Length: 25
Image 1 (cartoon, rainbow, N blue to C red):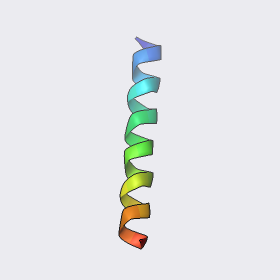
Image 2: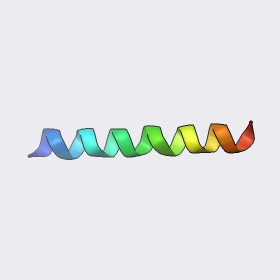
Image 3: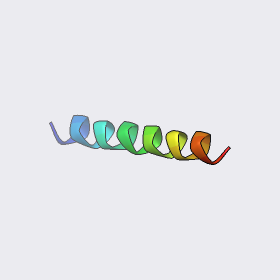
């Protein structure tokens, strides 16, 4: 349960960073 929750958070964080980088670029 905890591992899945952590993975979901990491994926969401990575997507957020990618969106920011694309927005800046």
